[in-house]
Image (cartoon, rainbow, N blue to C red; front, side, top):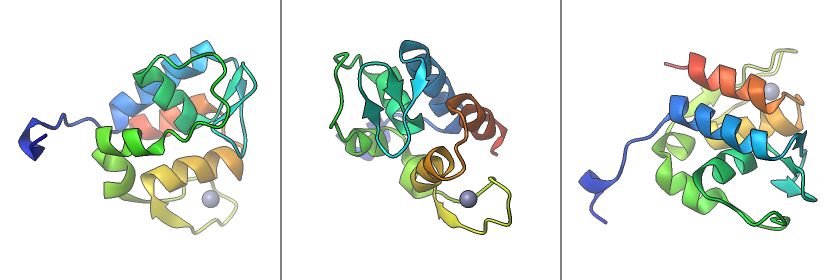
Length: 118
Ligand SMILES: [Zn+2]
């Protein structure tokens, strides 16, 4: 697909996807995109907001499609907002995983941070 046909989606829409994905799996996963039937991490939730995944999604690696859909995931670099003197500066996708796994931010906190980005 030509680049000009590629939809431009970014942080605010990503936040909405995380919320709709999180609503489908009430528990949060750390260190995995999905865990069991009821848990997803922030990126896993965003992916699920995009596609309807089978309930048993453990082991899926959703980032390839997400990175295509959301230029911002790899195309923008963000400073970690997690506090505690954390100075990590990573791609947006990596920061989301880092906030989820290392700072244990909830998916809702990550969605709110995404919405605050300019
Ligand atoms: Zn951090």
